Length: 211
Image (cartoon, rainbow, N blue to C red; front, side, top):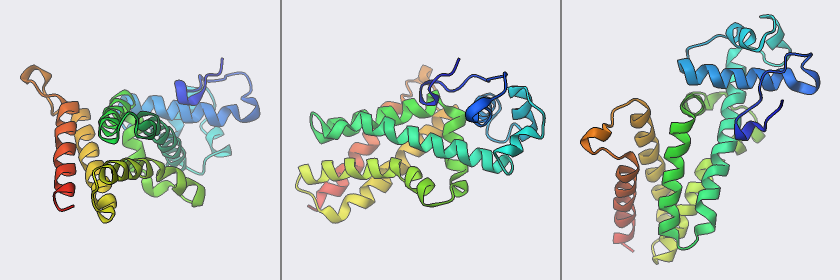
């Protein structure tokens, strides 16, 4: 049975792959293999084997493994952008609280989809074309809107919006990658969400200091 890719993906359709089913199954196989083995831990032939087709079958839809990874990254950024936008919720009830909620959503996505998240950022250069670039920029656009909401609500300088958005993104990405790599120890009180929140508060305070 098919499931929406954004809510868990497509299970392999082993009876004919009609109407694009093979392409969807290969993308889902790559997503699963990356979650198990990391971005470099599988080949296009292994994705084909996971789906139950010949090693030549994936080439009906993808030029090579990098092409498949680029498609996975594009879809990942699309889903990522939607999750962040949902967490931001147009800055309700107020921008600073909404930004904190957005930070938690960022970490939740990265930890729930470690293979997908890593593929997105390791394969950004594979996102060719205007439509793909638009999708890849959705996450940053969301962070920019959040930074604008926080700065403008506090009477800050609009010229600081992009810098703050980039700083928060760098902080969130670094926190996510350290979390995925196992560098935080909950037994010692390490809390990635709290680390991200305190870091973002410090960046916001710095941006507003010269308002």
